[in-house]
Image (cartoon, rainbow, N blue to C red; front, side):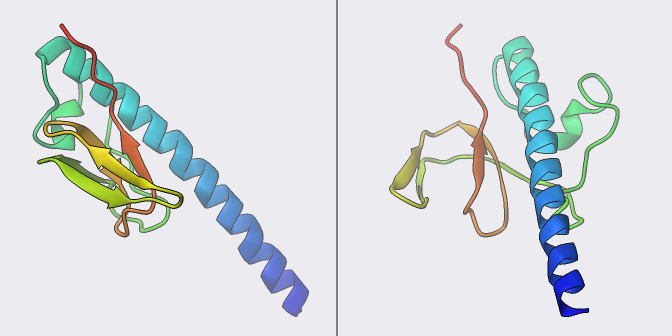
Length: 108
């Protein structure tokens, strides 16, 4: 019974991690398209619906919407080395900032 519980929890963890990565990639793509068309990131993720996404996905880890913000210039402690984020850079993250997805910026 214990082995089944551990194996089930491990499998759920892999599924959640995979879903998280796919949903984050969709959001980053939509944010990149928005930014390319509008010259900057949206204030909120709601601006992506319905032109870029049908609906906003929930973070599979929390069951709540993905965290999103526009950086004011900051440094986030990532495993290995700190990550410096430029002012105006859009990013998706999780509550602990241990996994952050930056939205690419191309000069006009």
